[in-house]
Length: 104
Image (tube, rainbow, N blue to C red; front, top):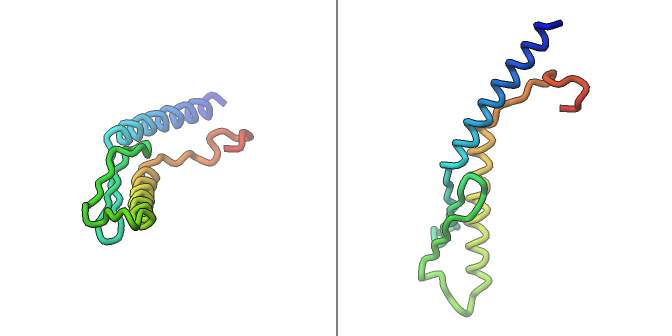
């Protein structure tokens, strides 16, 4: 009985170390999304917070604010998609039987 607990404890420690590594990776991660045509760039950090928005002058038209909004939205969505891809690829998988009866 003791060996099963020791094994689960070891697995939990390994997962904790992997999660700490992932947190460190997120602190240093930046991703950039670009709108179609490259007119707008949105850069996010690893937690999804906006670090910068770059808008090229040629897409600023006071008569077409909605068009600019669409470009910013497209760049932001692209950045979020890239961030999700980057973060999900490094997440450790939890063994299905690590905590039996707890619904994990």
